[in-house]
Amino acid sequence: MALLVIASCQLMVVLDITIVNIALPDIQRSLDFSTTSLSWVVNAYTLTFGGLLLLGGRTGDILGRRRVFIFGVLLFVLASLLGGLAQNEAQLLGARALQGVGGAIASPTALSLISTTFREGPDRNRAFGVFAAVSAGGGAIGLLAGGVLVEWLNWRWVLFVNVPIGLLIAFATPRYIKESERHPGRFDITGALTSTVGMVLLVYGFIRAAQEGWRDALTLASFGAAVVVLAVFILVERRSRQPITPLHMFADRNRAGTYGIMLCLAAAIFGMFFFLTLFVQNVLNFSPLLAGLAFLPVSAVIAIGAGLASRFLPTFGPKPFMVVGAILAAAGLSWLTLTDVHSTYVGSVLGPMLVFSLGMGMEFVSLTLMALSNVRTEETGAASGLLNATQQVGGSLGLSILVTLYGTASTNEAEKQIPLFLQQATPAERLQFRRTGLLPPPWGDEILTAGVSAAFIMAAIFTALAALIAVVVIQVRPSDLERLKGGAGPGPV
Image (tube, rainbow, N blue to C red):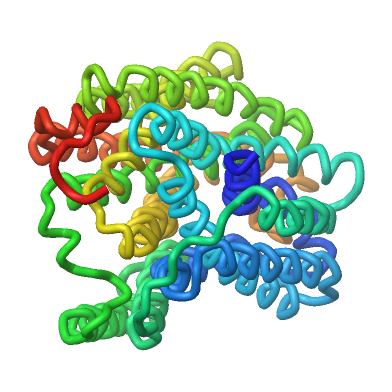
């Protein structure tokens, strides 16, 4: 029951990253969003989530993880209610940012509660397997849930649905989860603010570059400010007696390698969900519900990969699963680069998506276990928060890079397609093009597909880099395998 409560919270937090994707067109029409500001419906959540995860993990260590977990869930519920009731752009973006704060408090404490609830060995391995499967598969479930809610109700229910789920989790937590020991310490507010602001500036710079070009003054200013603020963050962390990011955790090569792998893989998985959602709805003409169903196999195969990894980790250790998982993910994304306007779901999308998902299922279990291996009890919140932060920051930053490449490739393709369209278009079609700036199929599909293929090439490079890090950096000692089997082994438990 404790694992059910923890996994349910993680599922609620993770699926909210993607559940709004399918609802974005309806949100735009309802609240009069511009196309540029619409992207912040996603970014307002992921950036506050990723930026404050470290502070959330530290808060659980100091104040007690169960107490902080409940507070985070209730804050998430309140923000979801406010978002569903939003009447304008500012109200919705504010609610999404507040959702990110609640998620940042609840998610790292959820992972820490697994470490304090389950004994090290097979029990904890299985618990991590469930948690990792939920974390990796939540995005696909979010797309399905979003499609169902938008098609049968309206876009507001992609936010309202969190309210009853969150209240049930908050009610069940005191009944099934024990409070953890509190560890005295201080809150590194300056570190949390500088890390969040720095990442917001960096992501905004990439998004701005996709829209206005790399020579735009605001683009360059955003990148410059991001460098300064992140440099300040590093200085603050080095001088702080109790930093939000304990830099000594990076001294362990396995943990540092784990964070590097997660950074790369998160960029790839965010990109896959984002661009495949565009492709199946705009090129394959799937309805919101059908688009959500199209991603359902992802969750099933991620669960299979996670189950295989958690079952055989004590025998082979995490490194083989890290290497093979990244290679499978790279293969699936490379396969997706072949999609074009003549592609079909079964012939061109389903196969590579399943290969990618199997690899990601193996990866998330191995990475979660490695990140919390040999961590002192009082720092499990910080370690889990850092892993989750790496995932969210990597996803936000990676997606902004992929969007930039998508914009460049689609612009280049548009220069080829517009003359072809104008040669064959009727007067009515030309007038519509001048009003909207959008090309109808098949010309518009060619432009979108060219951009999506370019984004998948970069996503495949990210996963190949993850495989390289796993091969070169990760080292698993015999004592580590002993601990996975439930033996004592050296190092703190």
